[in-house]
Length: 376
Image 1 (cartoon, rainbow, N blue to C red):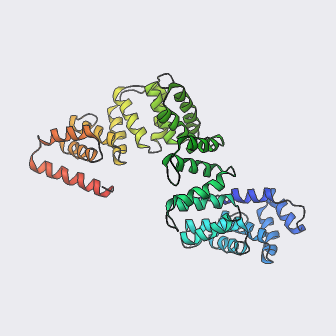
Image 2: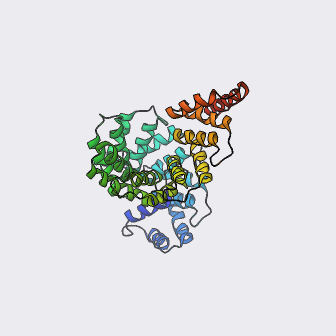
Image 3: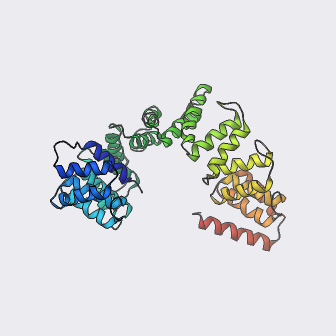
């Protein structure tokens, strides 16, 4: 749960702090920090931190965490955060909670993370409200409780925190902790998406495409998918590529679809790899290349995509893009059938009748070993 970017938090804090009203040494530290002289900032703030200045303690923790002005040292970062956190400084409490959640500079301890997040969240600190909601949703350090997750996400979402709005929208979408309500899900997802959250943009597009489903909503889906795809979200690139294949909401364009699938496939997105493989088989938007299709199907099949497993079995059975191998074909048919692909079951049953007992036994053992190693 890598959920902290301490440079960002330091910047947020510095924006909140006005140089007026603070001592000359603190202001000098701020001026040096803004000019990029982190060593000078550290030298100004260290005496103040040792005297108990909570903001200076927090900033020293951030500098040790980021390695700005001092060698990076997570243990010292945690020590300085702890001093400020004990004096009820919410940003330090959140930072310390995150270090316990991540096991950085301290032993990983979700219970301790919950304790520090809660202390900051109860002060209205939005990052901790969101983090506490996440731990309740996952059941880490606390008993899983979707109602509590909703409550904490809502507090953060109402402060316009995009990640909390996205997660609250997801809970409404799933009906976890609340009555399933797509309209409310879309409301929170839109608020998050409008702030540029790619996951919210993707899911909002998915809802327009799959739940609402009329042509005008398909065009709306394209817009949200495109925004998320432009930010590199593989699921959005894949979904947008599928719309170009089908010509839904956009003119049919196999070349555009292939370019989107390539972007997602490079991130090991199995559905994209499968669909790109199909384009290589058919020569749509890309030159025909059965060997490349085989490689893509193989990668997606290993990730557990049943359609890719079925297609991989077909290629082994026919010797398309790879040496003909009925045993391997049967293996992938069996795996695909076990994961719900009906066509794989039909072809597997058929090819199984042509195999001798030793071949069939070998194939069954290989399929069972794969399923066991991949969680059944």
